Image: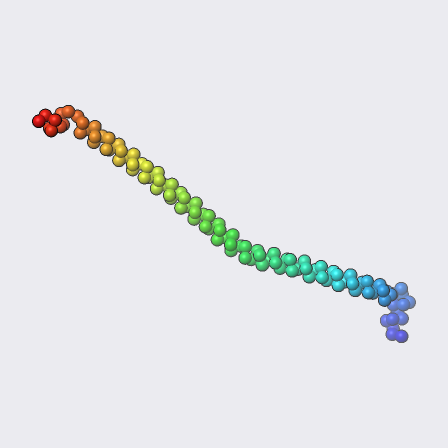
Length: 107
């Protein structure tokens, strides 16, 4: 008999069935750790892809806000120019309607 076998039998070593169960538990633990590691790798790769995507979406959102503000500024500017135009047209029309200014009406 081998020295290690003698030692394990004398010191209450593991029986063959216990070793088989221990190997099965070790294999199950290895499988579990492997699947957890695979999930962690998937998360890491998703994060690597998601980071530039999030940055690009943030830049696009900021640019869209900027464009919306510029568009609103142009709308306000257009409305103001329209008001000024209507005011000037109204004043010119009021001046034209005064009786002393029309020479055609006297003829």
